[in-house]
Each structure stands twice: as structure tokens, then as C-alpha cells.
Length: 280
Image (cartoon, rainbow, N blue to C red; front, side, top):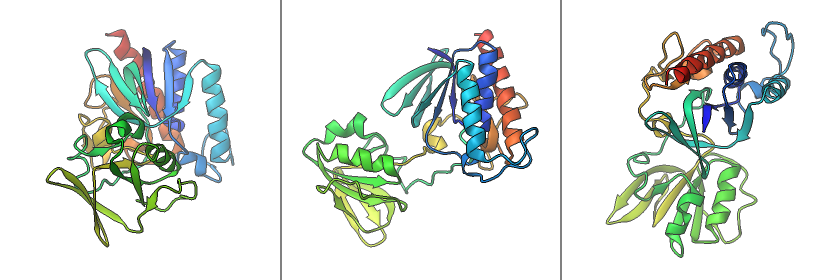
């Protein structure tokens, strides 16, 4: 059981983690891949650190946070489930429990396929390790969007007959030679007489199951209960969301998209989480 689980290791998430540790909270930071700040060639408007590049700033911040006792783990947070006085968080194939959650997911926006969300758990899956055994000896299609999808597809190929289609361009050279690559563009998912169908630009493909494997998760899947406003997570002055015990900070709560703003909001979110936990 963690006191605080933070999603994202950018300036908001790392600032929140630092403050949480200063409040002696048991803290874990989960991140998946590079954030926007790490890709910045130069940041010239962050007070006290002129002309630093983004990757360097993240490296310094991560070390500072870890030195204070926070855990930083790589993984994709797929689902956050509110419980009585805690949250159960599905991270890849593991479950972590936390008393509070701080979302610092940046500006990643996931455009889902038509009907994808409606058919989740009814032939659509986001986790090969979780659901792969259900399709042993059957046919599946993997809709992939990154290196992790290739790895998961190779695992599925040990269980099932796999076809692979890219949702966006990425390196698929490591795909198993037993996997058939579909040269098409996925558009929608539908179900006819118990059979799954992937509707694409050129053709429609029948299969038993469809695994959609992306490096990010739509907010509606991650935490459906949370309210948004114009594409951003709605928060109050304490960075509290519409879900008690869940806070948000950084780019995902809206403009301006600046490092200084994100760091400040992360600090506020962690102070609010500490106050929330004290009241449990």
C-alpha cells in the first residue's frame, strides 16, 4: 500500500513526488516512455537553470526524487479503480494499491477506434499477458502503436495465430516471422454473430479477438469517473479532481504548457494529497 501513486515523471509528477516525500508519504512514480520535457533541446525560462536541455533536467530531477526515497518505475497505468479508502491501479500486469493518486500524464491524447471502448472486455483487450490465454489456438489481431506492442504480439504468437496492423508508423522489424502483417489502416471495431471484425481503410478482417496495444491510455479508460473541461482534466485551486483522493497537475489540466507551472501545480497536488490522507 502506497500513500501516493503518481502517474507521469515530467516536471509535475517529479515535483509532486519530491513534496510527497518531504511530507513523509510512501510514494511511487509510474512513467511510460519519454515525456514532452525530455524532448526539449533547450529550456531557457526555468528559474535558476538557464539553457538546460529537457533530458538533463529530467535526469537531475529523478535523482533528486529517488535520493529522497521515492520509487520510480517504468510501466503503463491501464486502469485506476476507486475502492473504499484507496485505489487499485493496474500497471501492465501488476496491481498496486494507493491511498491517493496524482495524475501528471502530460498532453497525450489517445484517439480510440470507433466502438473500441464499447467492446472492451467483449473481444477487445489492452493486455496480452492478462488475456492472451483466452485465445490459445485461436486467431487474434494486434493493433500496435509502438515497440511494446511488437513485444506483446510476439508473446501472443506463442499462443495464437496472430495478425499485426500498425495504428501509427513504428519499427516492426522484431516481429516474429510467424506473424502476418496487414498493410492497412484501422478505422473501427465491430462484432457480428460473436465474431470480431476490424474495419480498415481497404478491407474488413474477421478474427476471434483484437488486442489494441498503445504506449498511452485514454482518460475514459484510465479513470472514467473523472470530469474534464474542454479536453483538460477539471481541477479546483487545490488541484483536486471530481474524484475524491485523485489530484491532477501539469499540462493535462490546461495551458499554459510551461515547466514552471507544471512544477508548481505538482507541489500543490502533493500538499493536497497529504491533507487528504491525513483526513482518512
